[in-house]
Length: 291
Image 1 (cartoon, rainbow, N blue to C red):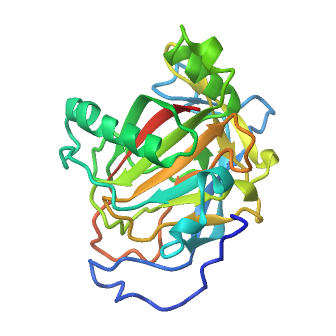
Image 2: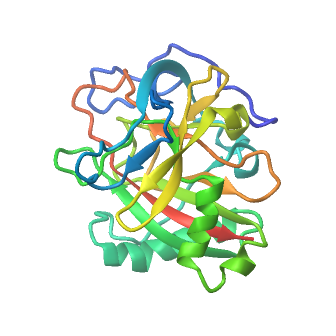
């Protein structure tokens, strides 16, 4: 938790009835998060991004569910920062992108420049932004990708450097001499969020020993993500009822000398979600930030 942050006060007050389909769960909640369990045979953990080769499992590690307290930072948004906690909330961010977010050309031509502008204007020291991909998640049956209910970090120190070399090979040697960060810009598409909100842990509450590198195997290359082992000292948060004009910055890696270097995160099932609530839809844009 940030040194200046105040823990949101626990409350049992419900904001409306959770039998109302429009009810938005708020306040601290006890919920289940899914954590990493090492492979039983001691092998290096791996995960295939697409269909695994014949005879290979999609991944070779296990998972375990733990009940944790997830605190709501609504009303305390400004108390957390990228350099301290590895996450930060921005509010009142307009967008001219097609609100359906179904056209990749529109996303790249309109929304990408908006994301770049948001980072350059709000991330201290940022001088250059390179956007390397985005993912849209929807909760309806048949969606290409849904919310991920597993604690993880998208990149590691190793894979961050590999990303620079992969995407900017001609400049990588020089760029790697300076500060470089991987920052995801996350927002809902159909807010306010009611179901499967995103939980994130303050970086300073997570030990390096809690994080396990996992080979992320693509068809033509291998990257690396980090899975998270359970530790009751981790401090988890969410932003209740997140809106379409809010942005959550999630830092996956940082070569700079700051406390907040990486933020574990996961969607979670809020037990207070009302019957009939709309399924969460979101977009995350992944960026390399230099400076």
